[in-house]
Length: 192
Image 1: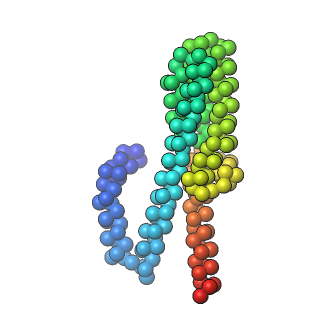
Image 2: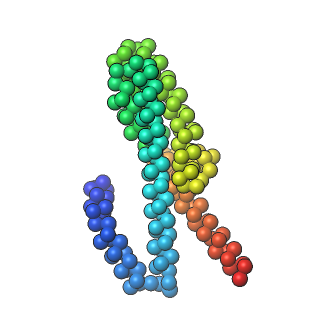
Image 3: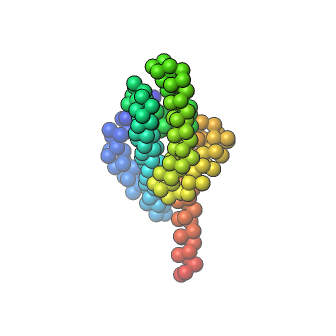
């Protein structure tokens, strides 16, 4: 239901935005509606940048893994590379699933030894991606330090499982934006 509803929301995006703006104008609680809309826009931008960063790292993984598999002589290098890159969009579990499925398929297509060597190289690439590339790309997009991203995903995963891993980085980015705005507002009030 959520997937179908999101498609209809995208189709009616302009109408929904007009309705929200009309409501904000009608029920402008002491001038707070514009502030709410501004915060909502910031949250939207953070989630958009997070999704773009995940897609970017997925593309990087698809290209790198395709190249590695081509060098290793894998028959289905392009298909497996695209699959691994696509699954890389899903934090942590996507890498595990793609590694297992990749190992099985490479073992079937080239033999067990071939599957082991290719999957070891893919595992190394996934570790580089998860610990270096993804935090750097996501950090640059969201203006968060890579260490904060690693800590956020670890804490989010340990507290809330898979859902915590998915939403931890955007939540940290939103908290950072809120704290920055509070500090900026306080600094501007202190100078007056």
